[in-house]
Image (cartoon, rainbow, N blue to C red; front, side, top):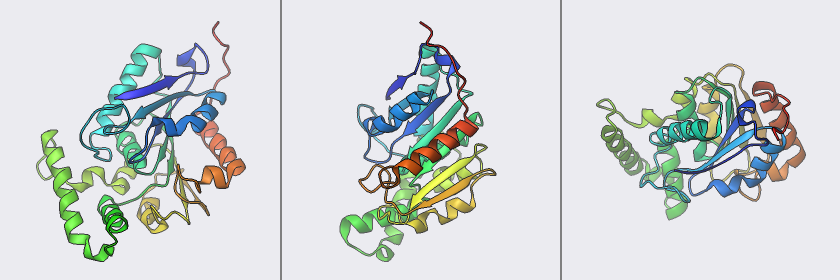
Length: 257
């Protein structure tokens, strides 16, 4: 895995860290404005290219099944090399990266806060939606084929990982994973999002852990021209800072020089 780590001062361990997770087809470079904002606020940042993207290796995009293992190794490496404190971490995710965020956080109770942007609740339903957009075939006619293909792919990868017999889409079901997360989540979605329409977040909203909140915006999909960060710039930054400051506070430290 290729990843970037940066700290606002030389006293890395004194700062909490925000892990940024891009969506399918994205890369770490998309996070440059958000990472700058986080550094200015006093956070370390860890920004990977997820497997199968950017400079990272890997042949399969698995929506959290393999990525959570990759990220556990990246966090361990950043701790060893730079002094990252794994007990003071938050996550900011975009689109399919939100599924990865939930898969990771469901196994790491030390994650303190998650900004979940443009997520979706059901991988199979999203597969049908993507296929429909790509082919022009109505989603209703793609249901059986897409469900079989996605389930078979995930099941095969799970077995190669040594997962229990019968492992299936539940291994990466965002709603099931969200119910296992301890950290408060701020779920952000847009009414104008055509890539992940609002109906795809309803089940996920019902599964959010205690202390979570939902921000419905008039915007589109994250990391697109009509994303909430551009459409509602001032409010977006205010909410982002308030959320992480509350659940992942930054201590004032010197520059270590």
